[in-house]
Length: 136
Image (cartoon, rainbow, N blue to C red; front, side, top):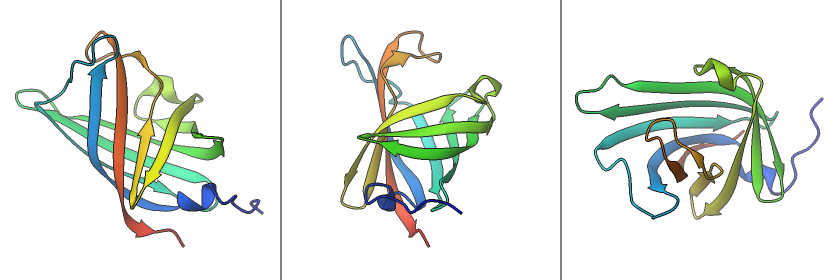
């Protein structure tokens, strides 16, 4: 049996649709990906499972799909996704850390500032999600 969710955790369960992604060069603040279309869903369950699917499309390039399934937990102002299986094989078995913030019906998840394999520079990112279905 799963332990009861804390008040902070109770805000996560449900289905969320990706509203937009902000990606910028950490050193300069230069905005990236103005020509990229991104879409996705993230679903948190009360038994602390999460599934994510993201699509990234740029004209003239093949679409990139990222998905994974994990267990989730919250500590302070961070949520952790302990990945079981992923479309990016190196992610399996890793802990993905995200800062989080709720504003109205939106959830913002922010990975740590890190080297970006797409752009080859250190970037700051945030993904803004809108709730589409409440949790059970």
